[in-house]
Figure 1 (cartoon, rainbow, N blue to C red):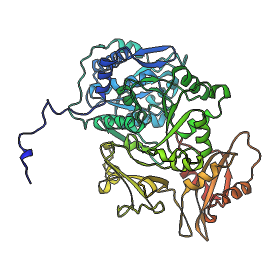
Figure 2: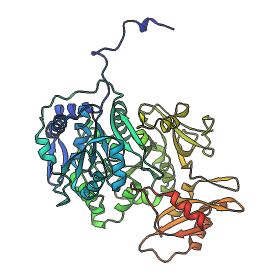
Figure 3: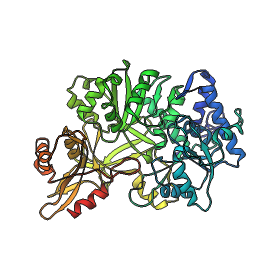
Figure 4: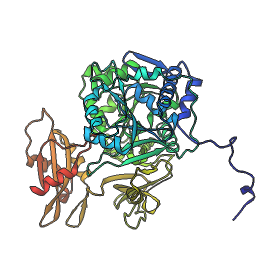
Length: 541
């Protein structure tokens, strides 16, 4: 049905522009040119200098024939060059493929070939694996060598040095915003625990929106000082390279996660925000008392995955680091839901506060929809905090799709929602709480057992460093929980019976592990526990 507003009111250059995070650096460099942008070892650069280097990178790449739709890969730690890639590469309309620095040569070779990378910018720390990966390719990319003084000698991966390459470019390069905000901005690969990884394609609009969503849910304000404890290769650093730049913040770079170094940088540069997995927060507790008391200002930490146990949250907050729990996946630009905190929870005992913080929460302002629903009917489950369903997401911060994989893309978007594969309950207040992965849930005697719930109980044991729970086939019950446990190095001798008895105090009888295996846990290159390996081991017991 037409309306009077449908005629003559079309978008034009005066009232419509594609959304892209690239404009963030142009604005910041214009408004705050002398403000600090990057701190890395002895390197200090302001926003005017950083913007100029990004334009030089774009210009130099253009001189080497890189243009719209071309892939530029980067194998870099959290150093200024990685930040520059997040702007310089898409300034050409090219697509940034940030590679996981923990991968082996075969995985890297697959990604370079699958993504058709024309250029690879690589740090000397990874010289050996890069040489091996590139040697496997029939059409290897142009390799540019990054020699970071903070690392040391390293292994040169190319005769083409990054700084020399940059000097080929023009710091006043006249780059262009994308004509279409749906245009690809980056390519990220899933961890690929079974078979080859899938290439997740992001677009400019989604990157813009999730960058702004980070600011909105965290109330970061102007000029945050952000410490790079989260890898920039992981979901493009959860879009924080663009977020921090948008608000004229300072990027404090960190090559390697080391607790003493983290606390030193927090103290020295008055770091206000940082992100990372719960294990990053856990490692800080092992730092010296002097380091833990070296700063007096408040630090905000955003974490994803399983929320830290109550005792960890309590200890971290005593240090002055306050935790925000978020949830997301590679396919949705990083975090898209947050356990939005309410003031009435402030005075609860730490155990209850930790239980609330364990929730994955509610959608970002920039996510169009979140639902916990039945995986087959796709009808929402009751908001009773008990009925388990799958988390579904939709909106502009969901990927374009999987590169060269229309079948997997169609399945992921079946029914007009992105299927996360994560099982959760929906609480009466609308907050979601993950209970398990769809493939990890244990069904014992007809009862669903959340492996996350059992793992949470295991982590409360003072001697447990890491724990993972999988299903073990059982003639009577169908399946029973089998726990794989890694003990802390200084832990007293602990037996299977000790662990089982401890769990009996925390869990319903049918949820208690029937088997406990003490071992190191197999992990992917991104640090995720490989439960499929453990399931195979459990079947052999």
